[in-house]
Image 1: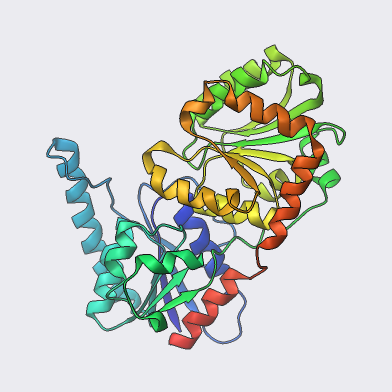
Image 2 (image 1 turned 120 degrees about the vertical axis):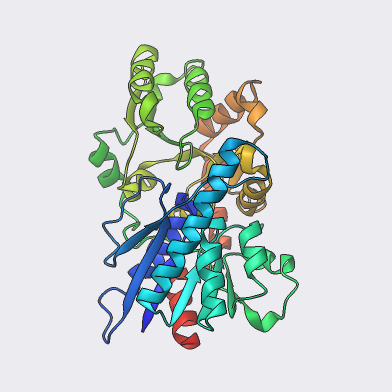
Length: 361
């Protein structure tokens, strides 16, 4: 059996594809797989992927009429030609797309050649690429039940699998995780994540706010951010007297999630799935340039009392500080948020998606 998985450039697309391919590693019988990614993909940890990776040309396609848009469209066309070459050479039995416009050429070409096709949607609100591809593919795999209403298609075509997370993201004892970072077990630990591309606004606002917290001595931070900000942010923590571990790229996220008492984060699809798995309460700021998608993702947690969702404007207006201090001081609120995660069903999304693929072959 030969499988091609194709994903977009962000971690929200790439990590579920990696988690899916992990489930085929070491399988009895002959399974060949190939991961296809756009050339502008984020820097990611590919150690868990035992299959080859091919890159195709890509650009941020838009409908604006300017030089950048024209160049991006030409790169997209080149990526389509490269996708055709990959498809003909590899000759897969199944192609599975994990979203974004970069996956469209390969999935459509597979449909044209009558190769079995699946798309997987990580977000609650489906993206434009998957909405377009839905009418052509054999099966649509969803992460959340509510996504089905956005596809006006036969229910037999739509399956609920959940959103796969990487196998290495195992739960670790809190003390072991804190020791990994050299942090203390008697302090409140906050994990700050701006997303796969980082978020300067969150980084700056969080630093400003922690400087105003009265009980700073009880705080310690694990902060993931963009490479260009690392030195500046590290020095800022030293000035305000908070112990912080600052990383511009960090692959051992199982330790970060297991060490933290609270996350401050965006609402990318993979992040939401990982917060659910680790039962980690969060303050969530949906990304402004993908606000509708991320707001819907964030509601998955907020509606069950597992997270506080705030607007980008709240980073500056004092409400963020108020909510953050409340969660730090009141252990009962935080403990209840943790218990509320029990309302989510325990499923192995990668295994379910694997079963869909095997059944389709």
